[in-house]
Image (cartoon, rainbow, N blue to C red; front, top):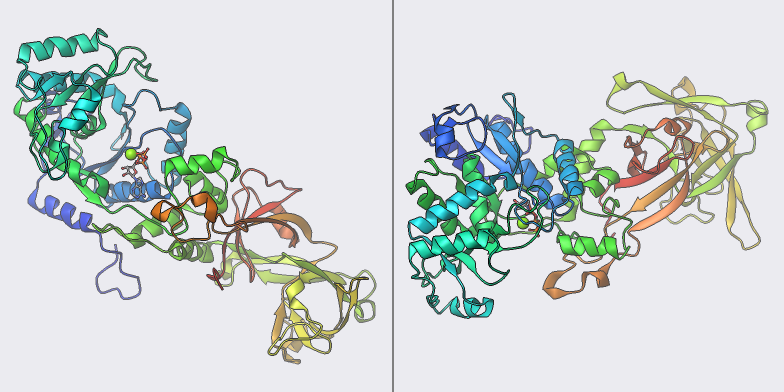
Length: 594
Ligand code: ATP
Ligand code: MG
């Protein structure tokens, strides 16, 4: 943490959750409570030891898809708070919905959390949990509610239930089943469990308040019948708990102290508290109970995070898969060249607030640039290559001569050493570095002008070669002897332009994939707009480029700064030593719309 009087570091964004946790630690809200060594009911925890963790948070994804940047924010927040305050964050798969979950997603989610730099291991135990392991305890909780008159089996049709729920301005109407005797409720609920009633014929509802101004308290459904096989429990169950019932119980069984979720769940908090209080009254759970806190979800411009819409992009082959570098999935960002540190930085910068706002996409890019600036080895690349012929090479040196050059691997890290490459009589430069008729202020190559081949010699442009259509096919120049960088003669000729280059005979051909924002509108799906109508056709461009010979040694995932261009990563999937493939992670400057 930054000391308050340290002016050099940017202040971390406001995060009201930190204040809440600090206060809880000060007042000892969660001090001395027992922990049974694993999730369980009050009796299980009472038989345990004093909880070694100061706080417990959780990251509770449903394993039904790939995680995206919004989840990364939630991961950084939950795991980050636990780390900063001497606690632990549980990795919990919320797999209470029988139909949707898949092992593939469980694995990819675990990978994503670990890749982001977090662990669910603490004090010798692994806090990896599956909500479906709590089905027995959830069932007991339901019977506990029924037994004490807090739940009933409702046999109204779905339409009747909807009609009787009331509206924001009108109270709901009691179901005719609401006053069913306890014994009958228990008997019918057990029949539900035994598979004696068809799907949709009845549900178990909590008995709270049909007149509550909060619709979530108007007797929410807590168990429904589903004859579906569950990936973990098979066909043991044909009734499954609803999310609003399951989630608070999962938190309580795991002794979560701070249950952090996004703002949409604010209206569910009263039921969260109501339910846990009722179960604590019956001794199934013990105080202190978990508390839910809501923060504003991360909204980034030019990005969509709806699972359904992301799936559509994949299914309709608008992108090349879940890990396409244009996708805001964690696997996509990773393949694009994003680092765990850059995403952590984004989470920190955006803090936690109670108000929904949009964060500009440039903030995300800025975080990556900031991280890669210090970490990446430099290299030169010609992305739009044009041949430059040094016409006096043989006289200045000798035919076939190669001139060794070197450059720092990183301009601020001398200890990283130097990279070596040769200057040869023909090199690749950027097409934009030559103008036959220079615009005002142009300092690079045009006939009669001198510029420096970076880390090499000053050269003087003498003209160009063209094809039949008048297109420039090569630039011609003469080497100015005794002007090599790093030698005493380097300053004998003053030039303003510096040209990056790659030896034509020693450079390595590479496929370079230039990526950009996937949408042309900041809020692609705003106001019900079809987000497919605002796709950026230039979001992926594949070019053939020439790169410095040393870059042929790159391994998949290695990141570089291509001098003057930006940050590039060797593609995780397609990069090969003899056929390099680099992805543009982010340019050196924010150039969008310019
Ligand atoms: P679904 O549409 O399937 O419910 P979901 O995005 O809510 O998708 P979950 O697997 O339920 O996915 O989410 C796991 C956690 O990530 C939740 O706690 C959720 O609040 C959090 N989360 C999801 N999107 C964002 C976001 N944009 N910003 C912050 N947290 C998010
Ligand atoms: Mg969800």
